[in-house]
Image 1 (tube, rainbow, N blue to C red):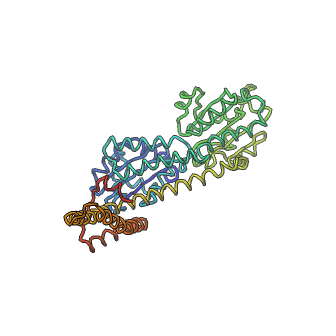
Image 2: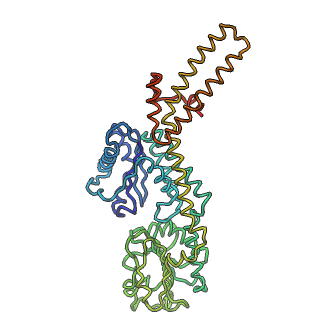
Length: 437
């Protein structure tokens, strides 16, 4: 049985996610050693997500509950975070829901910025790390490999991968009607994630050069050094915000990072500079809120000279294909998850089908030898018998696959044991398995 224990920006605080991400590489090895019923583990850790994917030994009673408990214990052992601190901060997926969840994650559907591309590489690296640590398993290998395939199909078939960048472009296109010269704008960027990097690149394409960055989570300096812009600390945030002619917010904060009080606080003797002062701009001050949930309190619109452009307004102008991109991507993900589940169920009856085929062909070979001793020199009897064996095997094999798809593959194995006294081997030779139709 597959199990996923996940804590993300949807369920946990940033501080907790940050603590979880400090030593994620230690969790999987501890987890595998901790619980004998754990057959494999892969841990995916990013700034907005911590997930443990586990393969459990199916016959274990209450395997799901045991798996969750084992994950929490391993996390506590590896990170020092008490299990009590994790309660209410995670969710659990099991069975066929695991594949759909991971495929959605890999495709960027569960990201702060829908469709962001960084997560695909992080998913691949999680599997690589598990391989290096020896904690992966055949089923987890198949799960993560299919996740990468689903992600590539979403990227190639839908507009999801372009939606994030397109919304930024669309926002700035809407701002074009108010801005005559982008190089003259004093821009403040609030946020340092993947969306912020895309926004910065798009601003520079339009000619903006005077750009500062502020990070509510304290990452402004690293971001500024990487991209060659000015970092802004909390002490100067209000002052520069009031001076900036264009403010763009794109953080994962759950509470507004900009409101009317911040802008009013920044207005003072120092803020009334002729250079860069929003009141000196032809359009006053423009605030673009790209956050979800909102980064900007709507009350900023009540300040004279300030205009607010948020996602709700931007999306009204979005091309139809971008609004449909998420729905199309989720359809691909669901179909990929269904296929993953079906293939897995078929593989579960493979040992039983191989046992049946081996039994029938052993009887066939004995009868062919008997026919040869009786004078079947031209091989016609052998040909007829082989054809009959193929016909007889077709319906049971097809029925086995149907039962597997319904989650009843064990009934097929039980029937073979009852009718023919066949023992079903757990391990199947790859050559035998590839012959099963």
